[in-house]
Amino acid sequence: MAENSSDIKSQIKLWNKSYIALLILGLITGTASQIVTPLISKYIMVFGVSMTLAGTVTSIMSFVALLCRPFSGVASDRLNRKVIMTISVGITALSVGAYAFASNIGYFIVFRIIHGIAFSFMGVANMALAASFIPKERFGEGMGYIGLSMIVSQAAGQVLGFGLFKTIAIAHAFLFLRGFPLWPA
Image 1 (cartoon, rainbow, N blue to C red):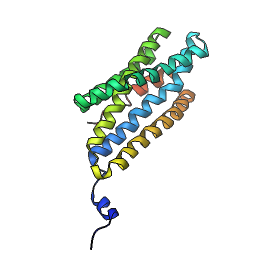
Image 2 (cartoon, helix red, strand yellow):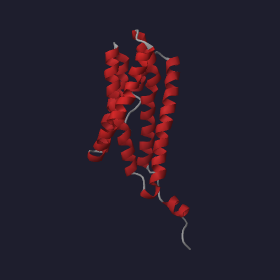
Image 3 (cartoon, rainbow, N blue to C red):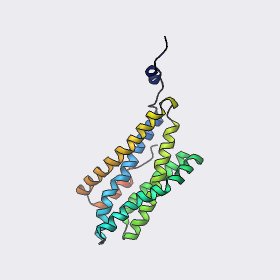
Image 4 (spheres, rainbow, N blue to C red):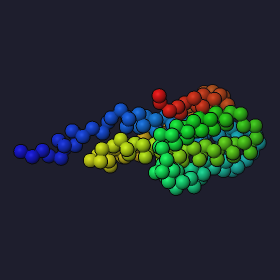
């Protein structure tokens, strides 16, 4: 009697240690990057800038990340993905922590640009690494979970950011988050 496709699918292991680690890493780093979004616009307004300028500076990260995606994709194809991931997670952590020390709007712009570049490389490298641990028979399902983790981290990050804004000083939130997106040992 021939096995049906669900029996074969259950025999091919998607949830391996490396895949789970990358899924969790993506959730943590994505959440940490998104937590700062609602905090930054409020924090920048302390410097006396308009809400429009604060929103523009806040959105710079997303714009830069979008522009860098083609380059991060090529780099992930040609270079060591784990090294790219490790470096980009470190730069992301440093840029998030640097927001606490920004003394004017110019520094915020520079840190948002650096954060956007690192975020672009981090996301692409995470997906590329995860793809290497997904069995080809379950590739769509595996990448679907990676995509879902990205969506959840973006939504959860902003909610947590508003919660931090109401609970602790903004500068302290940036310092707390600096240690949050760490590459697992």
